[in-house]
Image 1: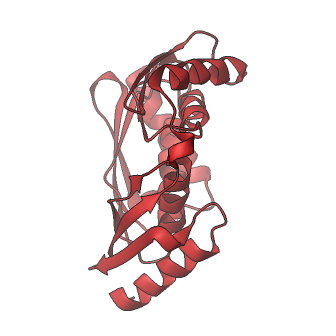
Image 2: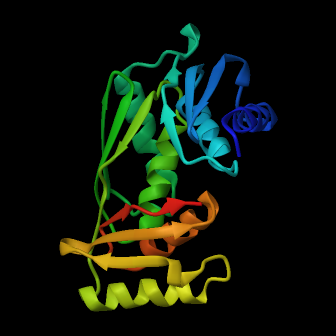
Length: 216
């Protein structure tokens, strides 16, 4: 797919996405790399825009230059964001109670602590990124280890073999130190790459996933 066609497809998808106001977003494409510029009203909208771009066939990479500009009447002090973040994390039954710590500076939220599963880690991030006043989220929450390294590698490879969406032989799984998994090879789409990454994160004992998988 040429860059001009890809630019049209990305712009159309952003217009189609109801969670995004595409009027303030610029799209440029070079060699399959999509650059988003301009501004959005919230971090949640920025996340939705990035997800929309990833759905488009032919996107090789995304350069994120979107700024979050909250309307002036919605500016929220850091202490208010921190209190609301702790409240929403406390209400979420998926996130272990008192497992996540929150630091807020200039609207940027940093999460730390330790949980058992990747879905709990992602749930905590999803909770806070939708709060008014948040302009960015850094997720430093770590995962507790459960299995031996050999078991981790085997479980990931078995999960890929069971998946109807992935050609398992096209993906190489390497287990490095301290639960770090490195994925390489090539898949057909971003969606397939996401399936592989989710399979890796679904195995207890994985602390980090380095996704080096190419698209196309």
